[in-house]
Structure formats: C-alpha cells, structure tokens
Amino acid sequence: MSATSLNSTPYNAAHHRLTVVAACFVFLLIVVGALVTSTDSGLSVPDWPTSFGSLYRLPPMSGGVKFEHGHRMLAEFIGLLTIAVAVFTQKVDGRRWMRILGWSALGTVIAQGILGGLTVLFYLPPAISTAHATLGQTFFCLMVSMAFFTSRNWVRQPEAVVGNSARPRLTTLSLFTVAAIWMQLVMGAAFRHSGIRLLPHIVGAVVVFCMVSTLALLTIRRHRATPQLAKPAAILLTLLLVQVSLGLASYVTRVMWSPGAPAPLVSMIVCTVAHVACGALVLVTTVILATQIHRHAETAAYTESMANNHVVSKVEETVHA
Image (cartoon, rainbow, N blue to C red; front, side, top):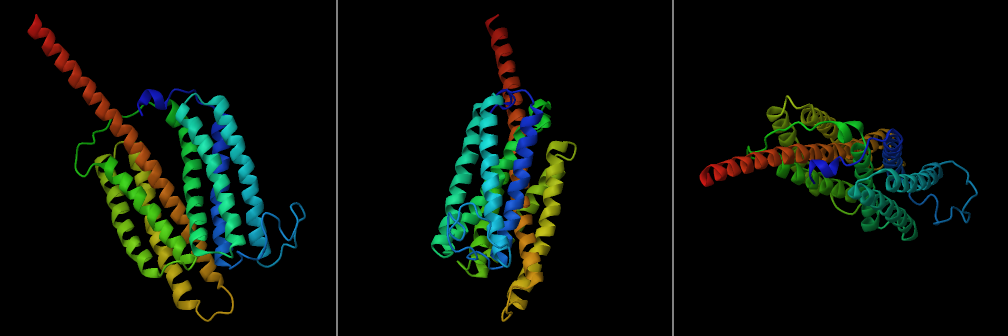
C-alpha cells in the first residue's frame, strides 16, 4: 500500500471515536471471556441462543450465571456496535481497503458469536473453545487496527522516512513476530481449555520472548529518533515484561496451588485473566508496530527507488545529449 492510498480520506473525528469505543469494548469482552473460563462458568447457562429458554428474560445473575450471561449480553452489544462501525465506515471512509476491513470485522464478530454458541451446545469441546478464544483476539486486532487507521496521526501526519536496509530487516521480523504471538495465544487458549499440556505453551513463551525482545530492542536502537516506531517498541517491551511476570504468577496459582481446591482460587482467577488481557495487548501492540514499520520502511524504499530512477533518467538525458 502506498502512502497515497493509505491517506486518501479526510480525518473524521466521529468515525475515529466510534472505532476507539468499539475496540475498548472488545478488550472488555476478552477480559469477561477470560473470567468465564477461569471461574468454570462456561456451562452456567446451559442453552443457546436462548438463556434458560428465553431470548429476552434476564436470568438470576448469581454464581457463574453472572459471568456467562454477562458475557453474552456484552457480546450482543458489541455485535450491534460492530454493525455501526461497518456501516459508518462505508459512508465516510474513502479507502476501499478500510471498507473491506469494516465488513471483515462484522463477519468476524458473527463467526465469533456462532463459535461461542457451539461451545455451549457441544459442552465446551477444546477445539471449538480454543477457536472461540483465538478468534476473539483476532477480532480485537481488527478493531484496534481500524481505530489506528482512522486516527488523526495516521490520516494527516507526514510520514518520516527511515531506512530499512540493516539485517535483520524489521519488516520481516515484525511479521514473523506477530505470527509467533498469535500461535502462542492459540496454545495458551488450548491449555486453558484442556486441549494440550503446558509444555508447548512454555516452549512457545520462550520463542515469543526472544522474538519480541529482539524486535523491540532493534527498533529502539535503529529508530530512537522516530517516535512512530520507538514509542510502540518501548510499550511492547514493557508489556512483554509484565506478561512474563503474569505468566509465572498464573503457573504458580493454577498448576501449583489450584489442584485439589474445591473451587477456582481468587488468586488464580486474577492472574489468569490479567495474563490473557496482557497477551491481547502484546499482540495488538506488535501488530501496530509491524504496521508502522511497514509504512515507514515502504516509504523509505519508495523514496530511494524514485531517487534512483531520477538519477538514471538524468544519466540517460546526458548520454543522449
């Protein structure tokens, strides 16, 4: 995507605010979803799409029902909010790829709702439950990306030109890092839903730690003077350290303290939910950093290419003269 195509729409404050609100609610939904899993409340409401046989009657909000039914109510609201985002994007955004992104977000939230229903109908099968959790993280990335692409800085800000010739190339490293984090979130969800053992998740954590820290430190070292790159890299490095700490706390409270407990420990619930939430923030921050690296590096490459073409044309004119 060239700089022209990326910025071929005026800044719309209302559009941007709507996408920010939607992204915040999706993050809240991830937190509530983690609460449902951590408190073993997934089947507290045993039917779907109704709740205790009703589509509109509010069930007694006690025990696990308050988490599960609250999760459903929030998901329904976010579905309506996503419809508003998609429609508003079609009306006010001149970028074709953004309009496609809006419809993609709507399709994703519909698929997410169906997967959530299937987890209830099939009594929490690990594969479907893992897909439901993973798609939720993907949906969060979509909504944050839309909020980012509608921001004043993205639409109006002149792009700083930075070089990307050093090895390893940050564009390549950032894309592989996003993929590694996404796979790690899949394994984390599979472990929480008893689909796999803990070892693959621990191995993945080591790989992700190495890749994220390398990406963040290289970006800061090479582009300290470019805030569009240095700032998200610094945030990512901070989130990584927090996530590692929360991962260790989750291991202690879930694996070492929880066996034999009559009910989920409060410490385990808090640490696990925070770990899931921070994982979502690590993923989306890496996506934003990768996007910024791609944008600015592409601009640099485009500028260099244009300069080379200009030199070649001048040489050809001299030769023909």
